[in-house]
View (tube, rainbow, N blue to C red):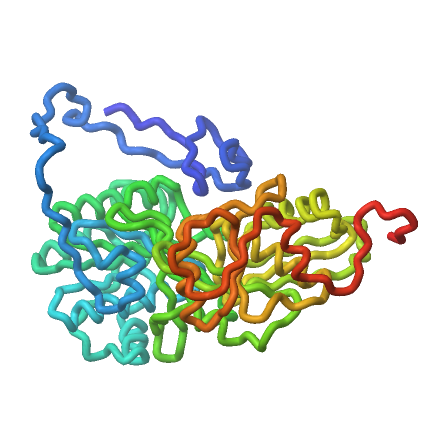
Length: 464
């Protein structure tokens, strides 16, 4: 048999190189290229044209909905689209210590208590550690079956011997290896091959498979991005370890909506679901403070009120700082440029700091108006109108453009006691429940923040 050709694979992006290089040309990562020896093709694999004829079915006709397993944890079920789907593969990623193993242990324990056979296999912790964690979380009495293993063949043989298994957790996929490859666990080839076999096995047996994935320093799932394409759903755990809040966000879901979130609070007894996260993110507000604005946003199907905080200070540096937490830094630069070029304000000589309270990250452009309000409030030292919320997208021409689901945002604000909303002109509203003020241009927002007089940009005699 001919010897398999050697190849060099980047462990960050999965790119294949003909020879070893210090830097990957695809992702610019240094020292990420490792030699891997693929298996030679077997005679059966080299035979072509002898495959089984696949039955082709018409597009029309009713199809039965995939059955779901409700976990009993409402926030987790919301994030995955209503519950676990039998025969599906779900990937959970997040920073170390964020709570991935904790939430999956809670989920599987709930399912086991409901009479659903669940197996939790860990490649990182011993059985004694898992039992201690379960005891701390109050789950020691759950009929959950545990094991510690890293060999793929051992895992498949163990689960095959228990045909009643309906839920399988692998913690984590980077620790699993297959004997058919010579590379070490965690490499691109091992992660890809192990995940492929586990997913194929789960779909054949109708098992809901949950994989835990490590993340890189950039917050992406470690290993090749093809792993995210292989699974049916990808969930990311977000949140700062200094905050007690955790956000479980769905970035891919073949059986539900994307960008859906579940909100949890980390306590000594594990993760506790938060039914109304708007009140959670606004509990630390102490009245109206200059430099703050409340954004009425939408996360998946859920309206959410979030506080945006801004601070503007004179900069001693030639290039002022722009620090952003919880929002897109490029979009902040765009808002600052629009305020300078279209509204005549000067921010270029100041340090600008922007923070989204509670450790959550905002991804929708509807937060532009709230960010602009927070910046104007910080610049003029004037609090925004009492009990007000903001939402709207800002264009480069300083126009305030309508955004989707305006009525749902207003209902959430009215429910939490807010009395006024500033929104784009032309928004579709049937019943608001609070006083609304429409804005067509960003300059309409300047009248809300008179504050101390600030010289416009380019005023003669102005001191830098």
